[in-house]
Length: 100
Length: 119
Length: 139
View: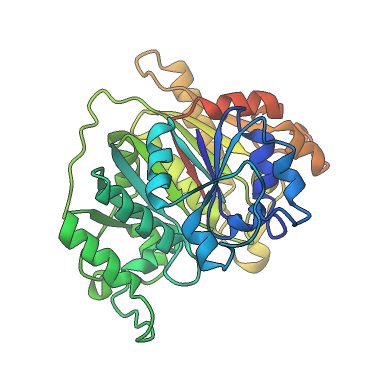
């Protein structure tokens, strides 16, 4: 399953809930305001860093660019994908769940 | 692959409609099919032809309509959610049609992947 | 432009995810309407209440206090649909109403506080169940 998280962890609990309930081995893609969770210097980075072995993490390139985060150091281990990559992830995973 | 899309939020207030639109465009460009996009909750507001964004901003209502015209994407607005929010035939934008919530279930049954864009 | 779908013989596993509290937003009510409509299509469904979504099925709502719509009784209809599906051998339709144990406990609730019969699942069991679903509708 591909999990989509679209809010920053300081705004909503959706990333936390996703990390509690997503099955191991799942793909998790950060989109919209969820991309802020990929910033390595943020306090919230620990949430993702502690689970790098359990999931495949991705972050949407266009949403990083929009927010001026393209040059910002991101968590090591998160792959950057663009919308074409997003479509691929949706196609290659069996299903998609949005954490809203 | 056939994608079915659900849009939960209206234009501008949330990024959901933009993300759904960008995803749909990328999917079509990659050779996939997006036969239907269903608009529910405040998503019905994407069908309001009275929307008049500032001249230097994107026009989401028209962008969705163009996708319908160019690629045959069926843009369906839920009748119950629409009535509640005052979206009626007389203000329905080009490319959209109003129908029942069953169209969402049908879309989910008849496509390979279902995606939801919301708040 | 109306599109037709080939749905003959299609049986998918639907998951309806409720994570938001009731009344502060409309999501609880409109997801419920989605669930009800889906009954007519005889698909499998898991209706899950997680995080603040557990408050949607807590007993004692009184929206009339400010003139809002009382949708909680509709959960009773969902319960009935589920029972009908369980009892009717001619219909292949499995419906489950599930609540996450950790979500209840974190909010000081137990199954006794809930207005309908549910399966209370641990996070681990719920995770496994969610992972099996084909279509996830959330709001």
